[in-house]
Length: 160
Image (cartoon, rainbow, N blue to C red; front, side, top):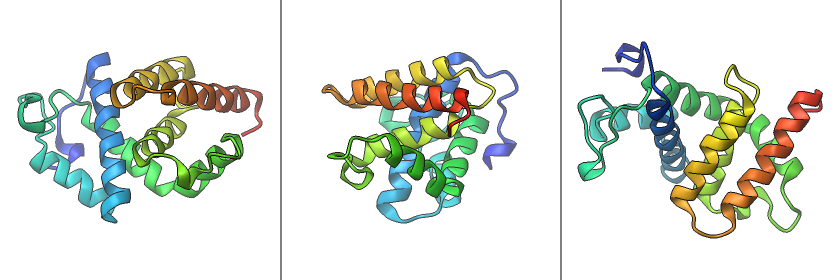
């Protein structure tokens, strides 16, 4: 089954949040393994059982909006150079992109990909802040908030 074959006709807020968490994990896996986005998406569907019948037990990801998951993973990998340039432009000098934790890097890339889409930026920022709090207990969520807020303001001012 491919992502586009899977049902997601009326995704809920929860299903979109789960898709974003899964996308961050998939982007991390792409970077660490060197596998293509298509390969990782396929692996997630087969092995992580991204479907409405799965449960969080044993690492499965239930109820994810599969279309959004695929859009984020494929979109980030296709536009990664542009996304990385935007991130590098706003990151503190002492924290260049390669120095960031790879999960944080994946999270920021996914969020930057979604900023400026049909979903309001404030929702995107809040969603990825929640995701950041799920992965990090330190100052990383504050950093995510600052970076995404800056990029959102720039996008809305036409400076991105």
